[in-house]
Length: 387
Image (cartoon, rainbow, N blue to C red; front, side, top):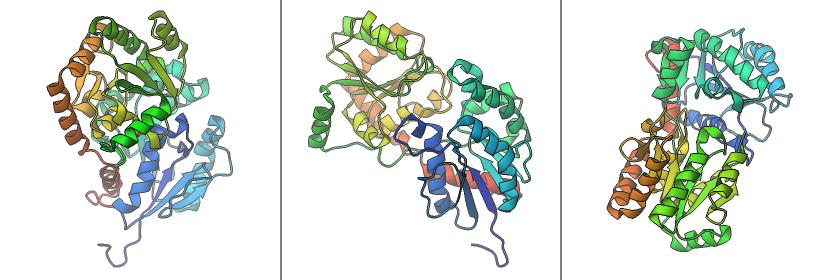
């Protein structure tokens, strides 16, 4: 309940990386930002939220929106806005707390601040970034992490990386997990699933991967493991690799040809979010052998749909799948193939994974994420957790 004479705290949200486009720009970080903006008004009805955006199509009726005239989809202009225009906007809007939703806050920040760090992929996989983005993140993320009042990490693994590589006091870092949408659930309508298979030319038996096709996602080893599975297991399943082409993707297609799998590996391209639940539901198994993830939403979404999930035993992925999934060494092709064979041929194991996956997915929600973020704002105000 709001006290008499209480002035709402004005919380600014730098959401310039938000994109509502039906492309890979609308995934990952953008999806986290979208859900935070969507759920904050429900999590906190006492204070005011002002979202700074560069995307003209955004629609959040419960927030105050401030759209930039600059096309900040272009990194140089986003950096210009972030470092030089944003501080002036914060003063103009009388912002009490700034939450920078993607790694970096302005060097001149006129108010207490929070930053969210999703991972340190720019540190571990610099080749995946354009030069300007890589240099900007490498220089300004450590600075921002040390200057911010609080740092939000999306997994304990990311927190450990921030402490180890950026030298941030672990007591200033809050781990807040992303959520999973209610749209991700088992679909019992067999007719709907059959129509979806027909639309996309999918067989009855499918192994699914979803993610950007790039070296960090480890898709080449997945293809080699699938080739071993086909050779030694004699299973009818096709492998579907869904996702946009990232950097150095050509090796994946070359591996498919090398293994003689042209008729067995399907590439549907980027999958829109509104179609994802159907893709998970038509799959017998979801495999996510990524080498490094700040969190890794796809295996969580797959489990929420009742699809057994195999994931890497590295970085944050054990936090995501827990005891519900099957963890493998992402560098061990033979072990990956063996795990796929075991899950696909053991009905009891598969049913147990399905049940445990559904239970585990219930522990992650975007509203919970928003409520925990509100507590971070409250800790800055020194009132024990509520702003």
